[in-house]
Image (cartoon, rainbow, N blue to C red):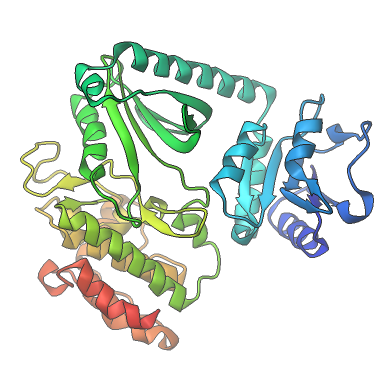
Length: 418
């Protein structure tokens, strides 16, 4: 497997080559010295390579996007991953619109992450690409349907809904997620669409609508921004902000120093404080639901199973367990009544994981994990991290009454450790 690395930094080319040979078998990284060779000739044999790593800014006035536009339509042109040192949503969207299969910021590059995007790129066969194009066409039909069948409430609100789909970026049990541009102002965003007609459970539709309604009124930099949402006879949709720099789960593959770990959890606590003030419990706080913008600020996202305190809805009942076992509080794991302190427990699990690069409890089954959260002692930190032990002990206390009682309390004790 040949991987062509086109970057104006010799050091980065060398680093990427070492990462690839460490993580992938039968790989041959080829370093293209753009500072010496310049732009390839028209007869350059792009088809000799299985994947192309292409820098956005190639130096000397050369631009990776220009190369992608000029050569990308050639027969045999390899699946392309755009590299950049800039965290900008525009670059991410532009790369994908020009035909790149992925985008990665250089500061986020690790051996594991780079190998992951390479493997995904190798799956971009002509058949897969054709299916993605079909998905985009189908998604555009959804938008047409939304225009045609908007409910009266949407019309009364004066919403003119229209989106240009860039590509499909996610698939749930019943919903699909697209990277899109809003027609009119070219705002890059994420559009989540649920096919109501084919939804197997009415509760799933209710949760989808509730996800947007729970946080649509919030204007906090620490919570995902929902631009608009709506329903037609056939579809439900949520338009929300796009995060170009991925999630905390990816970020945790890097070596995060303790002070930065404290900063991340302080910002997570700011987000929790905002949603708790309006009576919302997240219920699924985990690294994959903490997202990073292009400016490296973070926000809480994915409120698909969140709950309004004292809402009176019956989407979940006593004894029903919902959430992610690795981050689940004891009371949530046992299906008991929960409040905002369940989110604080999850924040404690995340703080431990960021500091230690491993989860506090590990087991092969969800039931065994829940048992550990309920019964096992809270693990100890090494001496060099002991200043965080009391905070983790209080966050992960088995009894909610022994924890911090609000996110603002957590902020006050963690801020001096940043």
